[in-house]
Length: 153
Picture 1 (cartoon, rainbow, N blue to C red):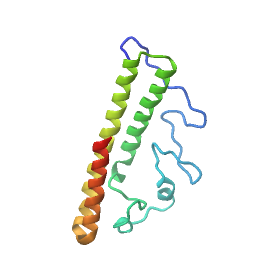
Picture 2: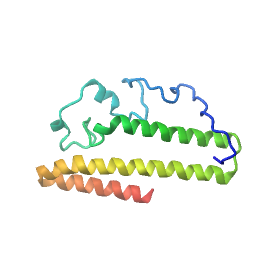
Picture 3: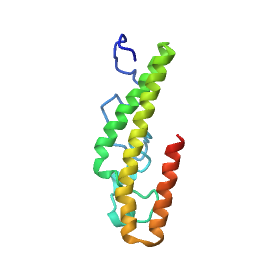
Picture 4: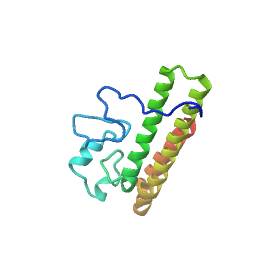
């Protein structure tokens, strides 16, 4: 967005909730940006930390669980940036201005990913290190693969 453009709220998407208003996810809805596929299962029953140990993709608590509200807020902000991109294209905004906002959205997602990675290392990998054995090897390999994906993006 250039300094001469007025900042407006993004247009609502049919079936989507207004920005800033969230309802609790249920088993029939999926919000890939904010809640993720495990949200409905986690809302129904949150298992103990022992239930997570050694299970890739198991319902929480995960390393990010303590900061979940802050992460969701951050993802909603990124979602607003992406909706702003849609509006910019719809309004035929100058290409370079759109590309500048694409770069900002990409940077925001990369920053979010790094935050999640750090929390994964501090929680999941650290817990596996305490247990030792093959679990540690698996978590290190998993983290290494995730880092590789981030570097290629």
